[in-house]
Image (cartoon, rainbow, N blue to C red; front, side, top):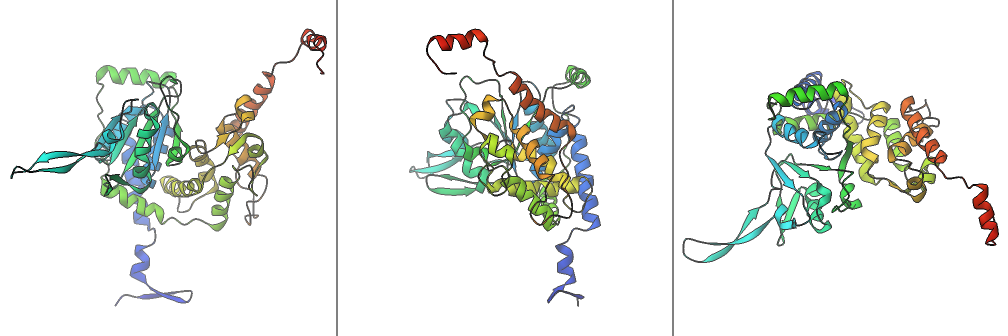
Length: 397
């Protein structure tokens, strides 16, 4: 007979409690699997450590990722490599202006049966896979983009009134190029909100570029091997979900999300000055889910303030809408997030008054301040000649 343990006023079986807690063995298994995943991805992708880590965190947490970067920095190669490493079915959808929703979800076609009659038969589209690469997603029309909304949130596809479930695990990893504006359609807020992370893929450094050229001269094909199955990925997700979150840490995370709203009770001065629309409740869900995975990935049993501050950028940068003042002053969402973290670092988050929450890195704060200072410096100053001209036409200064 299993031993019983009294917890509070409830009696729970020790065996059941053990299954619902994170054990040392599960932590070691999680860390080993993460190390194998990073090792195999590193065989195909040179550098981009933060982007690779962010993508893997989102996949373990069960979220979708939007990769933004100039052409040729390895966005598509990273997604293809992850498909090989996780050993999951992979589909690539090249988004173009003439792509139709049926080209993504599938459609009913007429087929002839053995007895000579005709009937409708569903032909699945490329979305019926586990990992979806939505390449250059902002080139498709809003009508086609909306075909992904149900799949990204509910993991189902509805065609002709019939809903079909997608295979688990399911991810949408989308790419877009920020500099190519001709023939593109901005992603609507509803779709942007369904991406857990927006990751900025930077250009490689000199040493990384030399390694990339050396590697691609030998072969252009991906060489990564399978390091984790779909079932193991779901087990890793279940393990991460059991990581505890202290009430003070949870309150700080929700304060961080609420602080992006200029009209909320937690609004910071940066949000009031530069933000038109703040993050949705999905941001809070994504922040906590991803923070649990990051804590385990770094060998910790609990979520820390540092996890929240580090993940605030990929979680919030695409969920905030800047106002005209921010656009005119060239203040980026990342700069506003840095200001918000800095402001929250100097005051308690609700009841979390035991100590200050860690602030962002000094370099990030200096970058944010530099952007604002640069914008002020670039504001044109009227010359005496311009002022006299305004006087000549009878205008008031």
